[in-house]
Image 1: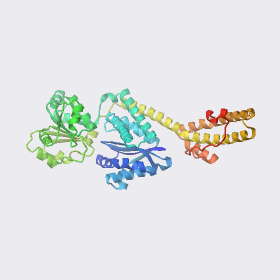
Image 2: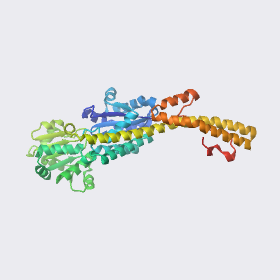
Image 3: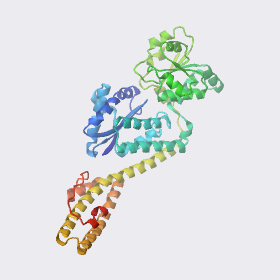
Image 4: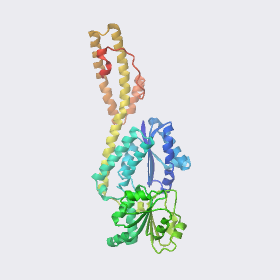
Length: 446
């Protein structure tokens, strides 16, 4: 099978388009089991990227498999197929590997070195497994990328900075409300009324960082009704709000943080009505890919809006040396993974050649036995033939692995096809050759 990825990310698209594309991921999961060319897929969907990693039946069918996936995204998102196709970049084979390792290490994030993405990569694989649409190759890829991200986090300064989309957004809010004075900042968060909307991964990170900032008056609301369990799982120090109580929280809030990315959006007029009698200045952090708040609320008097685009613009540059070290670690990990993958890819060609050679060998041995029986002379001939085959196969086997490591295995498989008419993916033919019991050929290998 052949690996590839389809990438739509903040580096080349606006976040609105990424959000629209992301609504089509359920259709991808549903389409994979019945696809013609696609053998498996893993969907990585975050606040600023949609990436689909997949395996096709072979290298020649990558384009066909990519088209199957893009069509399913278009159906699920209700978008034009051509528009969807133009939004994604196709990365084949080794390029897909390098991209995932880079993404998982936080080196392709709006906040360079962010740690949240590593967990998202891990969860993407878990979801694909639960959906039954992954493959052994994709599992190895994602597990290796996750290990590399962990190594980067523990082995470079990027892991110690703790920067993330959430932390940068909260820093922006702090500067807006308290400037750079640390005492004023601490007092602001201690006194502020904060309402968090959502109970997903970003909401969990937000709650933890609010606690670290010293926030004491924090409430959580979820339209799904999961707020109470969400708060309880995180120590129960925040307040879970449901039903009409949330309206009062909107009116009294100093900070609103949207992390849900659900279908409901708080409109500007709605927010203005809820806060009609409020004297509180309001800071809104919209961290959802599909907005929790209407962007028009930025025009309301006394309201500051911080979005993912704001975070991207404000994200700090990490130390060059730390980023260079992280990239070096990623390069080494990618090289090791690709070399191992290429070595494994040589196995089909090696097995095909050995099957062919062994079939010829067993046919010749069967003729010797038919003529001479299980005599000492026949045994000597058999042993000599097996030694000869072992020696003959040694160099072609070594060359197969060498060419695979160099990315030239196609030359080897083409030679097998030309010389012996061998298809490397063919099933092993059943052998009908008779054997002498004490010299069963299954106990020897050439």
